[in-house]
Length: 507
Image 1 (cartoon, rainbow, N blue to C red):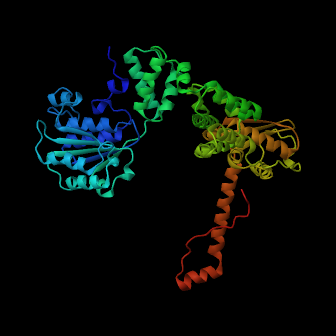
Image 2: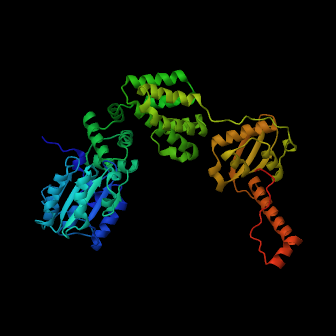
Image 3: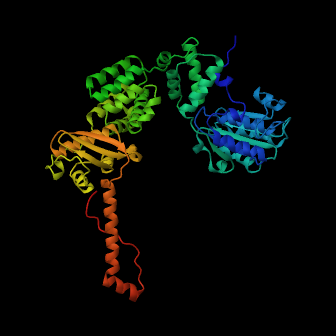
């Protein structure tokens, strides 16, 4: 029995089957539809994103006998011959194995002759950046004055190595890495058609490991099917990829708890399992990214396969800690090859996360103010703003406080109202920071409650805006009434360009 790999079985044969490169496909189909085709195309991008596949479909379309709306029919003799690899007017070359100028000259000698059975003779040169300088010169001569029956399709993962003289004679199309959801959707479609059971967690692991390459994803899927005996299970995929999810999540939990012994123990388990430690940092970065998203946009965690874990860590870690750990991991990934060995490098990155903390502004006990007394009615925004000015608030916590209206303040409870339209300013972490600042400012423990509603009263932010407007208008009146200014305007035909009042407060 013969088996053909999924990457070959499911290689697209029409533009409509291409995944994730709509910007390229649309341009090519429009050119074919209108007959405005170029003589040379260059497709760039990382491995497995569709460069050679799109080039083959384009070669098929150039010669298709029944082109339909810029799409090869797939039924004519030309289309069938290209799909079966027997179309003589499609000359495919791997430049990595034919770098000499003699090879290129021999290849192009026949370009002057008319195609044998198609409209165009198509040269598809893969990894074209591997050609030597002399080979590029030989290719350039044909690109400068190509015969009307010749088309060049070039593909490369490294366009920087191609001479500018060659680049300038090609239409360039940059293919993107595929998004994880695009790869996952394609894998689901293939598995459904093949009748293979698969766990969603396993697909997500394969998708992340593919790093934007659909071909790599299909190769990994093939491996996972073989490993799982015809099924694709999460545990099997993790074992196959050398990643233990429990160890990774345990590592992040230990970091959040600032437990050095637990962190080192998790690293030891990962090392004993033979896991690639460079991949561990990449997975930590992914987890920190999802935790940061959950802190700022909690709804993003609802669709996460590890929802409970992500939300728990979003509560356990401050946003500042997450951002600092992410930056340390990112820099550590760069420095890992310089470490004496991978385990030492990983341990030092993790110890760095534990050693450093974001700068914290110490809370200062403030003298009680007149706002401290029990208030069961609306408080003037000036008094609320004055209280906020005495608190060590910064960043988005400060923004949240200044856009709230103080509804009630007594010995044990402070109630604020945030306009529903500004709900994005709220997070549990910011509320906790504001509560601590209030307790420091009032000199006692107090419970903070923030409700959402429709604010009809002026917030401190609105107060500042009104005061700024009043100062601006007062400055404009003062300038208009100033005798010296008026004299300049009348005698020298001067103009007042702008008026800016002096800021006297540091909101």
